Amino acid sequence: MKSFLLNIFNGRIVSPWWILFIDIAVAANAYVLAFILRLNFQLPGYSVSEMLETGGWVLLVYLVSYLVFGSYRGVIRHSSYNEFRLLVIAAFSAFVFLFTFDTIVKQFGFHWINVPRLVLIIHFLLTTMLSFAFRMLVKETYALLTRKRTTVNALIYGAGDMGQITLEAIKNDKDNNYNIIGFIDDDSSKWGVMLHSLPVISWKKALETGESKEVEEVILAINSISTSRKKEITNVCLDRGWKLKVMPSVGNWVNGISNKNQIRDIRIEDILGREEIKLNLAEIENGLAGKTILVTGAAGSIGSEIVRQLLRFPVKNILLVDVAESPLYDLQQELLLSHYDAPFEIVLADATNEQRMEKVFDEFRPHIVFNAAAYKHVPILEKFPYEAIRVNIGAAKVMANLSVKYGVEKFVMVSTDKAVNPTNVMGASKRICEIYIQSMAQLNNVRTSFITTRFGNVLGSNGSVVPLFKKQIERGGPVTVTHPEITRYFMTIPEACQLVLEAGFMGKGGEIFVFDMGDPVKIDDLAKEMIRLAGLKVGEDIEITYTGLRPGEKLYEELLNSKENTLKTHHEKIMIAKVREYNFKEVKKNIADLLFALQIENDELLVARMKEMVPEFHSNNSVFSILDKEVSV
Image (cartoon, rainbow, N blue to C red; front, side):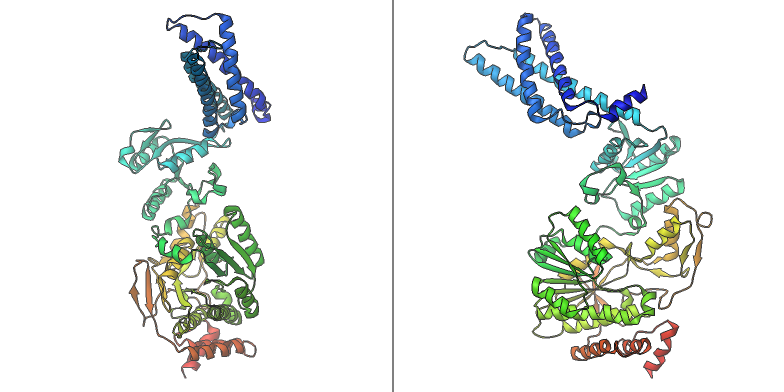
């Protein structure tokens, strides 16, 4: 019997015309019931012929209304709120027409097709209820037939709109294996009430309920929750062996639609991020409205997120410049899907190629430039200093020079904490970029405002430890950490890019903005937390091995040079670094010599030049550390 019914449901042999026929049949039976109910009120009866005559007229009107609104076209087993609403609208429209027509006819003294108003009212109510009941019966029967035997007892954390959307998404999924037993909410006014026939309880009560009803998962479906609270919930769930899932916020739904498949595992980014950053949206919008924005390194982790953040504002056009063809294509397709009408253009170009970039500037005339083009992997750049100089310094020089030439309003340089007291080629190259950008800001008669932003590691960016650890955990380990005491500052990609935008329109020119990165995180602790989030145990399921510091790698990162201090801004997470100022002519000559030397000098000589430009650069790479003494002599 079950197989037979499933074949009927899955084959969709009930065509829309059959649904229309059933709806009219329901309306016909409702009309008979309406007359019976009317007679019970001891009002004058009507003959069968009169009832058939008036009934035919009523059914004709309902038929036309159903055809006009198409309320019969849905798949009954997947009926949703919108389809129920359409059914009510169709029935109500028919009722209003009949009621109005009957009133007009009686007003003029005609008795043609005289339908009692009470019958019309009762008929409308019965038709609506019975049609709704029919659809619910089919929907629930299908859900019962397709429900999996193995179910996971789960609680939804959040009894607000997001929690109810999550419940609906779960119910609408035929492959759903969740058995939702209740809602959790921190609002005490909601405790004890029933929501969709499920109790709303406190977190404390949920812990007791979880033990008695063998809860296996908690689904976090709430937007307004602090990171500290999220971390607390995560730790409790991990200690109890419960899985913690997250329902993304509306802005992160795939194609703007909620469904059960979007409920994902909790990530390390969810519990390491800080509280929501409050931006000066009015100032940023005023700075971006109607402007053409050029973003270099647009296909990278930071560049692509800057682009996503920019699309929130009424910009005229965004130029996505990158030399990496495939990632640029991927970003293009992502934006076409999520922002089909977004004003952007991709530009496949090398930011170090001055002639190519000049054509871009000449054609599009950008108002604002975000320079995120750079090589960033410390161990690789220790092996290839040539590329660190050519790309990091070369691109910054080309983009800054063209920005001045074409009268760009604002140039925002994305830097790194590795530029502070650099111990590697990557950090030194970024520090030289900072020096060049800041020295250009000292020039007179330059329209462009030059801003530098400096922050630490970004969680989940390409090449960061988080994706690496995730892959190692998926393979069963070991998870490799360079040193048990190594620490880093972390920030999520959206956090970093939001602060880049804020700083970009806060600065007047020449500032190096330093972001509040919070407390440093031990990489060893990060690895252990990620193993726990995967539902595994350190030392039993996954081993951690220590490989030793890599060439150029610091044990601890810094955000400010020891000789620097900071000035506060109106944003609590953004400070201005007070750094030494450099003479532009001298810096310009040194950088020109360095870039020219790429053609004739080896790596050791190139690094020696970098050390002359950045005296605080002390390499811990054995290949280059000997140069420290030579430079000091």
